[in-house]
Length: 298
Ligand SMILES: C[S@@+](CC[C@H](N)C(=O)[O-])C[C@H]1O[C@@H](n2cnc3c(N)ncnc32)[C@H](O)[C@@H]1O
Image 1 (cartoon, helix red, strand yellow):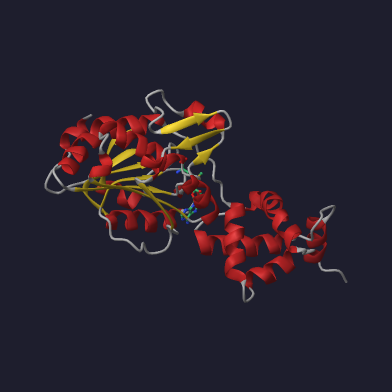
Image 2: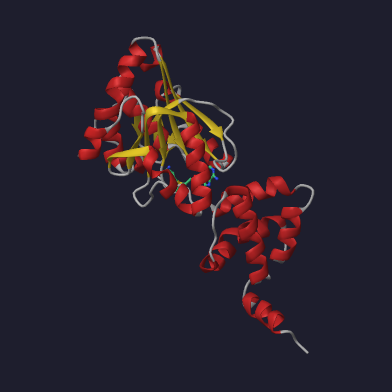
């Protein structure tokens, strides 16, 4: 007698280049959640097939079951990294959600620039930076507020789980079309608009340190950070994972520091009282010594 689950498994794989069952999808979804905190709901079953087919082809495999053996075998860690890279969405652009950069420039950077000029330390972090457009947009904005930033203790950390996007990011070279996202004040001293490429100037690149970092694991650095951009990353996590990541952020922020998140994201309910919203999806970590009552009234 044929089991109904095996009929299902065969139906799943019908007319596909590689054998792929719901069980394979579930095991991949579990691995992805465990490694990167990313949720893959059942509706993503076809998406996972199409994103991972290229990996199976290049490894010469015939089925997802064989691929799973590779993922969980002795050299599985490197292939798990490739899998996460294939399954994550790295879409980004320069000055995405431009109101955050404007808020940073007008409301946050004046105090930080004054601190830097007085010899203080200033740290910004683009967490989940993808191919680097976000941290370079931060660097342009910092240089607009503080043109001689290189003389001071000002650094931008840019991290992502995916080393491939980080390699592209640190090269500082983009397609010529990316220049359309740059405002006019980003002049040739910050980026050169060449016929076949947009190149970030070395003085801008020197402000940014690119590092691999998995946000769902304990952070290796202590901070403190004055500004964190973590936009369009936590959206792929479930609520408990979001709370873990936000608690980690609180651990490396100092009171009064600024967070910016993506337009469709919100701080976890349990932590909402720790922050005061001060612009569209922008939040200030409450400072017990400086209650933000005026901001609450806005
Ligand atoms: C859609 S991009 C967001 C890029 C940029 N922040 C923006 O808003 O334009 C999401 C990035 O989050 C990264 N990511 C996903 N899970 C992660 C994790 N657990 N730790 C660190 N980065 C992660 C992905 O590799 C991807 O580059």
